[in-house]
Image (cartoon, rainbow, N blue to C red; front, top):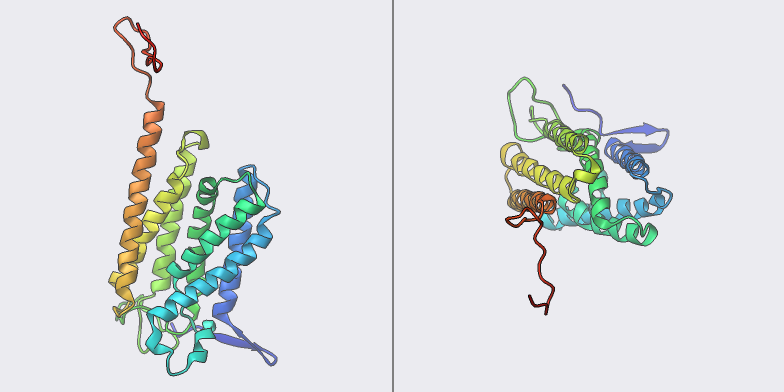
Length: 275
C-alpha cells in the first residue's frame, strides 16, 4: 500500500492529515469523557474550559520532550521545532504535563469530583483516544512506520524507504485490547465493590508495558529509545504495585472482625480503660 498523502489542499489552504487526525482524536476524547462523567453522576459543563488547557499542555509537553530527546535534529533549523504537522510528539511528555493540568483544573471547576475518581473515569478515555490517535496521527504522518520489513503486512510511509512495520496499527490494536480489559473490569466489578484507583493502576501498567514492547520490538533503536523503554517498564511496575495495594486494601476492609471463644466479636479496650 502506497503512503497516504500527508496533506491536501482546499484552495490555497494546506490541510495536514496529521493535525486533522489529532483534532478528531481530541474531540472524541472530550465527548467520551463528558459521557463518562454524566454516567457517573457528575456535571460536565465545566469540562470545556478544562479541555482547552488539556489540549494546549498536551501538545506543548509532547513536543518539548520530543525536541529535547532529539535536540541534534533541530539545532540546524530551530524553526522546525514548531512544525508539529511533520510529527514528533512524545506521549510521555504530553501525559506528564496534561494530566496534572487536567486534575488541577477539575479540582477547581468541579470540587465534588475527587482526583482518584477522576483518574478512574479518564483512564479508559485516554486509552481509547490513544488507539484512535495512532490511526489518525502517526499512521498519516511523515516517517510514521517502524523497522523495515518484507512481510506481507508491511506498509509504505512518506519519508521512509521500503516497506515498514505498521507500528501505529499495532499500537492501536494494543490499546484496544487494554481498553477491553478496563471495560471488562468495570463490568464485572460494580463501582461499590471496585477499589478506587484500580482502573487507573491497571490501565497505566498495561499501557506502560505496551510502550516498552513497541519501542523494543518494532521501532528503530536510537538515543531516544532507552528512556521510553525504561519509562514503560517503570509505569508497568507502578501500575502493578498500586493495583495490588488497592486490591489488598479492599480485601482487608471486607474481612470480618475477629471473635472470641464464645463467638462474640472482640472489641479493643479504649485507651486508659482497666478491667
